[in-house]
Picture 1 (cartoon, helix red, strand yellow):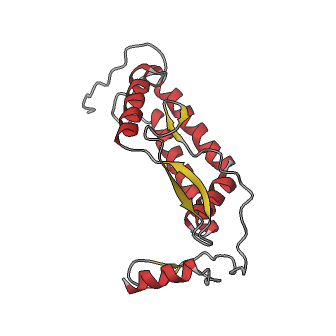
Picture 2 (cartoon, helix red, strand yellow):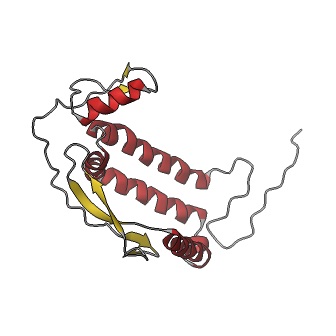
Length: 190
């Protein structure tokens, strides 16, 4: 606990110039480095455009109209006021997601078409890594390199991995790319 408190203190005061302390309950120097501490933090030149809830494909205010501030952990300045969802918003989102899943284009797509959507999602993460990493760093103070070089590429790889399963049968019946009957018949060989 003391180590975690010390790490938090070091990070919040931007004192780490080489390495990063990680691990639980003990200090370990990771293999990546952070930038040297700056006397005056640089404010990212990114606009925070989306502060509402995304429900049914639309950005909407919370049902209660409440918002909460998200702070720059380096300076304590407010980055933006974000919609504060509650149980009613969760129910709206779940209902919209269920309807989209049951009646939208997704259930009508072949496994191959679904994989193409996921591959496109991974492509978008790759194309916007710099912006996403900057926003993540700005919002919670983590080292930029961790977000840009480790986490976002890992997310992209995981999405690609699971998208690639659409054409991997391995003894299971996978929906075909056309409206044909597909069966898996298990027969012993030899």
